[in-house]
Length: 632
Image (cartoon, rainbow, N blue to C red; front, side):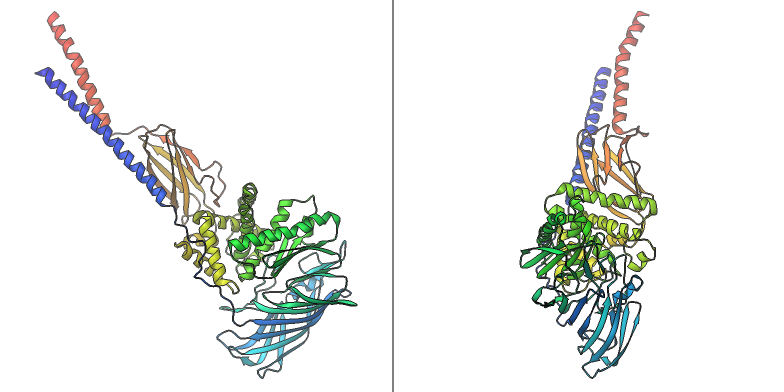
């Protein structure tokens, strides 16, 4: 009876042991499947590539500018008459009109603008008084201008061009050339804040204008080639050359003139793209190739965002640095045209400036108050240009460069708030915080948003912005609102933390396991506690790879994952291969899992195994004792 009882007890323990093992295996298997399913279900539904139901806004009433002016190279000046037809499209009567007179910013450099005569007439308004303060011309009307009423302003003016290697200026050696940008009185925008009185910005841009109708009759020396925002209607060459430009709806009018320009043209989709470059054999190759760069850019951008709306695009060499944008005309640094200079940089500058045809020209923005719309978009677009051509290595190189320069700068100088106006940036007296933050940090932030939403959804957002605001003005709140609505999620957390707060996440990572099946991961952010970061997480063992997206919130986040197969070695990666603005890590965001010794109380399986060993030992010991007694 005793032997049978022991066999029954041993059998019972084996059954319990088998059931315990099966329970652990089944429970762990179920958990790992649920994690993988969860990771799969977090993939976002892609928004449609185009919202055809959203129609572009086009102003029904626009102001008009008509110029009759002459460029006098003997005095380095341009003078003549500007006639402005202004209609009050606001819902309030106006007693004052406000113009920007940007050449006043160049007085210390030899530039200026002088109002010779000014007349206001129509609707019983026949005289006015005016005053210029800094770069603002204010015209006080004798009678208020009621909504939907018009007035004609006639301004006889002379603008003196400074001798500067700049976007506004002229040079005489080694080539002669004149660059007329922001050279005339232009109406300020009246928006929800009233008349925009933003000053001229040398560091960035402050060119915020409404769409208007522009026409010009321009007289220049007869040997001059002229690159202009407007298409040529006709020209007459005699002692001088008089060019009549077609009426075009556009935001601004710029031109460049030189007797030393050579030019090359191509057409795409009804647009004539013309490159103007100095007539030099060493510059000819890139001078001609610039038209192809322009064609490729317009083709890619029109497909990605919306059509380019003007009939001409001028790409013009100038003696300044980098490049500069105007509607229908871009300036590209002369030194980038030489054969020995960096080709990728030259190409990048061209496609960057052409990207500005969208922000802030087709889509009007206040580039003084909100420069963080325009420049980050242009940098992002110049890299998207490479991606659209399947030039993956070039795109990665440019992306890595932008990331690294801001990482290095922020380590040295700290992080700056991206969502700042030009008034904030100019207060430094140093252009580096502006350039590194707005261009480089701004690009990385947009790239993070693209990675989070997916490229298809990101482009769909830009397409809806185009359809909604082409021809009118938008603010950053409109920009962010459309991104949230098209992506079907509230993105306030993203824009608030990356645009309007300072500081970069400083993450550390630990991982541990007691049983080789459940892994506990702890992520600590030593910087700020308001970060929300959706980050890719990988757990890699010799038997499997778990990939999912996790949210890191606040200063500490604890995560738990159960594997399919038990392991005694595993590596955890967080945000691997992800572009994430962060403080510099001394080690990569990865860690080896620490396998801990299980603590009491002992798991069920350990108890069962221990009991079985005791029983077996007792069974082995009893016969020996009986034999011993018998011998004694």
